Figure 1: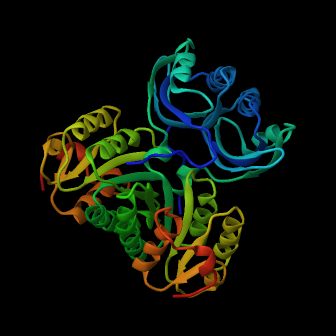
Figure 2: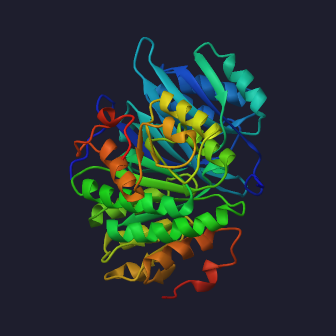
Length: 228
Length: 228
């Protein structure tokens, strides 16, 4: 299966390390990485182990260095306990379709999206379908805004029966940072604030995947504002 | 709806910022955060904007400082362009159930998990269901190992018809870092390397959510090694 880094980007070295969880741990780490010419792109504290001393388990993705150089540089730090190579998350889980809304409809959108992602992933794509069932204007609006903070999120599907108000405001904000939105056909102003409206949830999920897959020919640009 | 930070952890301030993408950007950021007594827990480059100068859009979660102090400290940096408060991702998307395997079965597990998560999220929980359809021993084993690197991942469901070999090795590694696994009943050695085996995919998804929900009484410890 072909695995290519994103176009125009330097290769990313990914490692997981255990480091003593001091106040200066991350600064030391950042200095060491910069010292070998690397740029930290992602740093996630995946687990913390209480104890004396407390340990933080960190997943680190660094651009512009080889994996060997990164491991050597970090193993040289006193506070680093174990280091091992992992695989950058975009090479494993790829592009993310996010589905938010009412449980029954989120599940149907997921059904369509997972089935379609399966077909593209078989041909070398990497597309994940990530979902959360939520109710209430405030919760859904917060989730829509937070999609902008999710690494690798490429498209949002809003699955519900009534959405508007602050959710529509949040939808405009999300589209402004470059993440398109597909909504089910529903009550409320939301359908005027998305790129595409689709009545059938399974088809909405399918189209969402087609819109982000390099292995598909679907062009969301050409469908903008339409309703199916 | 009640929103409580994870037990035993300090509150987390979350912000998104645009910073000029220089070699020393992250070091400067880390020093500034440490200077006000904060600890960076997560840093994700969510988008990069080419240009002169190039900009990196970064989502940052910091423990041990107030949101106001964090915003003030980062706005004081020359290379930081815009700063705005967001919401820590664990407060929006919560605990993550990860579902990996064949498309048809992943979709059915997701159906069960999303429906069950809906019921718990209505009562104040925050549970997401994140999926990727994949085929092949190498791809699936890599995904199983990478679950250890995913922030907020709490449980893995393996949904397929045949898994074993390196996938079983990866399953042991994942459980060793404290992430339990539920597998569908299937061909191969995998069913001897997971915490629970469930034949019906919808039920597997339901049980996965019950196992991580604080609002449920299901105890995976007491079910370990069983098959349903």
